[in-house]
Image 1 (tube, rainbow, N blue to C red):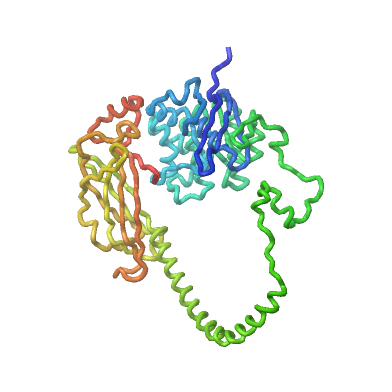
Image 2: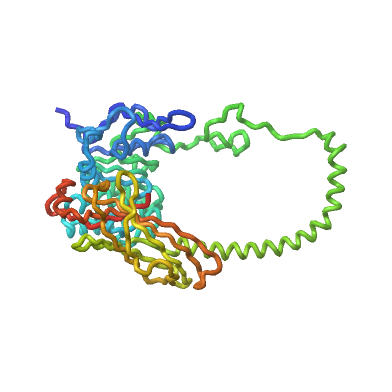
Length: 475
């Protein structure tokens, strides 16, 4: 009896509407992946590789056709089952990393294991081992904004392997990595393939990853087929390439339709000499004196403008990049009174920042809209405060009003904290002023429900950790 494939696509199609008509990002793909198989998906940029990966992993639904996980259509899973799969059976490494900005590297890695009901201590040990595996053990307490793009990608790989998934989906796992780091990531994937306990589906341009795959698939214009040998080997010309000319410089791209090619500009020479040359000569002579004076004045004005631009750019950099604003902690009291603590911090304390406000608000999602709730911020609003390298904490107190709210994760409220402030580099509020409007999102455990209620609603184990709040990326 043939074993049930871990992933199967049956005529899967994903279509998008555009002003030019329908775009078939994935077009009628049939694919079966065994539970111990390593698959590499190849193709040029825009061919549909990432969309196919999203379909196979259940991140998006096919416009037509079906995609199955372990013999069951993704369309048949309810949200609680899907959340449980993504925190346990499925490891996802997205192209942009997808790390939660409010969590440290260690917390990002161990989160799937905790949500899957694993012991917190054991999950932490495994997270540390995985960070060591990807060479980031010493950066365990770094936030995503403090890591390079390649480092974030390695943390994302560690997180994808956290709960020892049945299938790993990885989108460009060696992108943004230098040669040594890319080689280590390839070795990790190769060891995982040799263990034959996890199915691996990798979207890649890297020949090293393609070489270790059991099968290589090529996707072109949304259609998928088995890759030929010449599809995966680099092309080496047998003769020296000709010099780049106007005729061959666009050969790497598709040719434009003839009707769209511009003609070369030109003009009738006789008209130029009889009409325009005398006029131009007179204009040049008359304007030379004026141009000389204007040039001297313009040079001085440009110097002033450049100086002011540099000052403004530095001030804007302070307001938008050096100032960090985020949620620090959330506490719920027995009377259902919730305190969200927001903090301000200057990443470059040698240049003091001054903030008017911030003006804060809290809203909870209900029926797809945001309902503002009454809050108490004490003296936070209406004052100018200096922000240094130490965190400045601002508490926000509120009580969840009665009624039903949207629960994107069962037992958790979708909460938005808004912050509006004016930032200056001067204490008196003069000079360049910049307005910042920020929004921070968290999943807040409904204080009206017990921890056991939340575990049962999500199908978690009896000993699963039920965090009070979970930071979410901006959206």
